[in-house]
Image (spheres, rainbow, N blue to C red):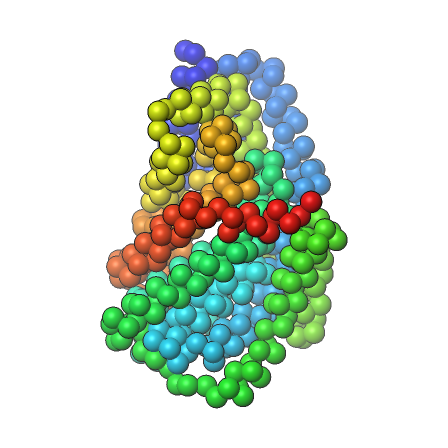
Length: 433
């Protein structure tokens, strides 16, 4: 067999292993090692197996992962998410679908100190769903809105999705973080517009709440200062060039620790929970990246990415047609594959194609994360849907599927906006030298 044929067989084998339930990182490492050994020999393959795990884990860039994860855990156990939802509800709750819109705003705020979509969904869902139930919201629509809002966890920085893409594609994580800010705000606004339109059309799904006096609204803003300080300090420091993404992660984790102490949350149970979740999440991401790097060596010797890039670039169509085709593939993959698996498998394959077509790598990173977001809420695998059913145990999955459709359409519209106006993602990164 030619190396190209081995590459195609390797990708098929990888998908079969993942669908069988094997860890994504382990599956990529096994296929990458065996495929590399078949093409280059056992001795070079053993060399890859000896060096890649250490060089990946020992990389200074990788320190950003446990630090940002720790920051998110400290912020979660500090109760920042609860304050964000209460503040947003006082400002938006009186509108049609206002409390659901408040859950979107709270998700956006918590995403700014979290970086994880499932964590954002679970945290905001646990706070907002009981309140929406009291106001007689349709439980399926309420759960769908929270699941959609949770996707902001991987678009608004700090984001695990940007970190994964940045490491694999060797792009600036700091610039990727900056690139996600404006699109994240736009998507949150589009989600709110979607909720408003649905609620106006069918008020029974999302009734209006009571009007809050302006005095209470203004006083409630003081509860959001912790998130504003953390997010503003991290992004402001990166944008001004005062510190790098790694330094920002350390400062963010330290700042979250200070809030953790100021809110008197320091006890054995919370400390153990923070450290345990940080270690579990970081270990999972490290394993995936190690597997992705081994698999990347295999793809390099198969020449599959280069062949695919050359083929697509030679097609007599606009490069945007090809790019929309790639995004359509992501939409399909999002229906059957976890978003984390999607980014680590496809980045080594599609990144050379996109670069060959002349697109900006930072902009493509944002589009990659948007595709990941779609996978988070697309049946039947969308992880946010499973997370929210764990929170709203009385809401069947098929009911949430029925109400998630408007949010999926919103994401598709948002994707076309990003294609038409790439500067929405590139404006802030271009300010950094």
